[in-house]
Length: 591
Picture 1 (cartoon, rainbow, N blue to C red):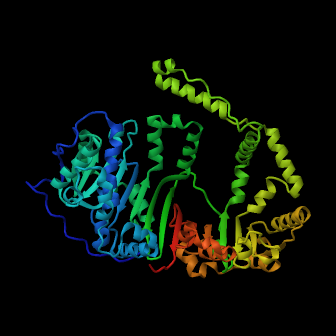
Picture 2 (picture 1 turned 90 degrees about the vertical axis):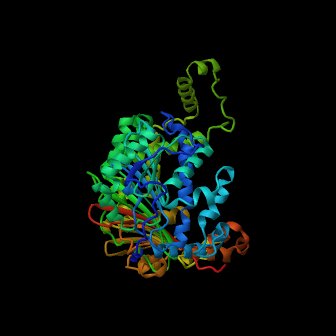
Picture 3 (picture 1 turned 45 degrees about the horizontal axis):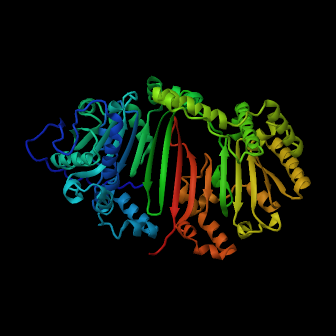
């Protein structure tokens, strides 16, 4: 994330014709466009709105690759404050960000060659849009799009979900209002869609009708999304807005869903939204680039019932030679609090098992007979009835509680464990899985390792040391009895491990230095103290290639060679927030 803050460019030239106030609403004059004042045809707007978004989202790249400015008015400055969901694409985030994007594209030769990118001066709008506009013979990129298209686009959803004409708003940055009005009219004319348009602070506000465009401009002129305290707070926690960003007001969004009756459609799943709103009041995300990696960061503002995780050693405390590392904090508490739900899920799995092993299942039962007359009389009602019949016919039988209890008893007897107590102990305050470099080729080979001691694999539990040690002894004894596999255990400071060798078991209960490696830090911020997943993709591919040389000729394998590592991690950006980060680091390859 760059600290560089380039000087903002001069304001765009004034539009042709008489000067207009900062907030203006104008009817598009292009004859190709359908009437902007048409009422109620919200469903038809999808294709037309999509055309505008595609033009701005895919095409705003000329500035991204040629201008080294940044800052300026953002889409959230011109969308109304009542916006409950927002996505922004900014291809002029900062000078260093654009250079990083170019360097990153050059690390993936197949991508840059496919896009035709050769250097920072390439006009991606022309490369991409001239091909995309081939279906619109009346629209010429150089004449109808390039002269007015700015650098940013934003899509906002308002709270009135009952009426998409009121809720859907798109803000497209423009450099010439007159040209934009005509060009956007041509784009919608190409798809035969209705739309409304207004202008505010260098943006065209495009909505399904002129009435909704007028209302959006008026509302944003009074108070914009940028003025919303929750939005501003979340943007500060996010820190970097990157190239693509977004925001969701979870609490107000849930209220809008209920008001629109959408929660009735969701059925039992609606309860999950209530739980989400209790734990998270709002969330924000951003996609950004460095010269070596691409990262998606997200932050969630805690709700009335935030989830608290224990303090643990973290992913970065695994050994330095980790190829695959996974750390999950708080698993023991989650099992303890949700055991009934876990048993229900187990019942669902058992039902599927029984369902897919029914003799003759390969010959499906005939579908319910379709009644054309009943459909003609009441299409919507009959469609619901017909789908219900199909669902009932294909639904797997439900497993009884006796089936679930019998399965759990069998697991307990086989492994010498007690559920859920021993599962709570195993997951503990944190549960980590480790795969090291030693013997990686044996794991990747078709036969697998001849002896488990030849590979470096293990797991480590943090929590109640005495209980974890007892469980480790019982599990290793069970595996020895059932499969003849001899494993080692070790106990450290609040940590117990099971591994393929005593050496690995001992290393896992000590503080390792995975966090100190460059590859780890390229995809995980800090020490990964809140848990996560780290995968050294390059090491795995090297091992696969040595075990199976012929795989080097595979196109998919060759494409994967562009990736050095991937990382997923939980973060704690500041008090009152939890976060998540996903990163992909790319290899250095010459074209």
